[in-house]
Length: 101
Image (cartoon, rainbow, N blue to C red):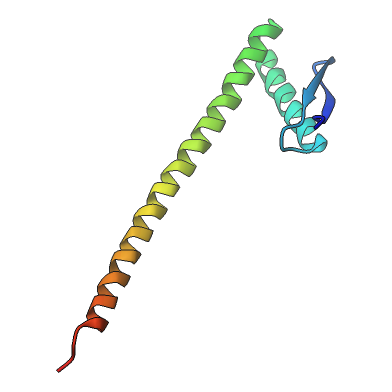
C-alpha cells in the first residue's frame, strides 16, 4: 500500500513528508506551527536555523509529552473510578443475592 506524501515548506525550505494518520491540511498546519515557533526564536536573536529547528522540535516534543502524561493520568483516574464502581456494583449484587428473612 502506497503511503501518501505531501510537500510542506518551512522557512522557504521544501520538505516532503509522509502522512501517517493525518490529512495534508493538518500537516501543513503543523509545518506552519513549526515555522512560527522558529520565527519567534529568530526574533529572540537566535540566528542559527539548525538551532531554531532543534529548539522548535524540543518545544513541540515537550508539548506532546506533557499532553501524553496528562492523558495517562486521566486514564489512571478513570481506571480507579471504574474499579470503585465495579466494587460497589459487586457489593450491591451480593446484597441482593443474600436470603431475606
